[in-house]
Amino acid sequence: MTIQVEPEIKLHPLRQGANTPLWLQLKHALRDLVTFELRPGDRIPSESQLCSFYNLSRITVRQAITSLCDEGLL
Image (cartoon, rainbow, N blue to C red; front, side, top):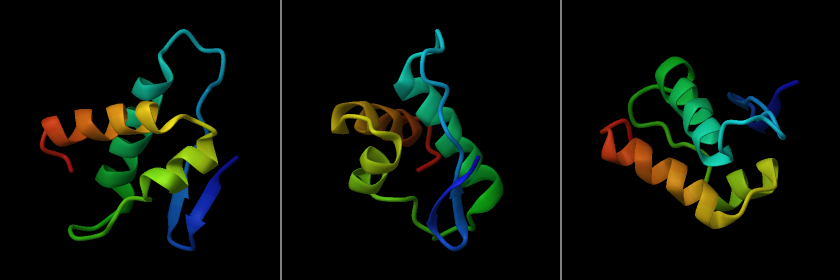
């Protein structure tokens, strides 16, 4: 199942109950989005949108985004 944010952006669901922390699952999903779907200059969904779509806290979403920024992907 794919969740759409905007017509061209597709977010893949996280595996609730998996042993991998949710922030790390989100980080991997966003890394795939940035690497394979988006072009340079495109924006990822906002923190609020990600919180809403994944039913995650803002802290969890921010941790995933911050980690990608630290790696230089965002």
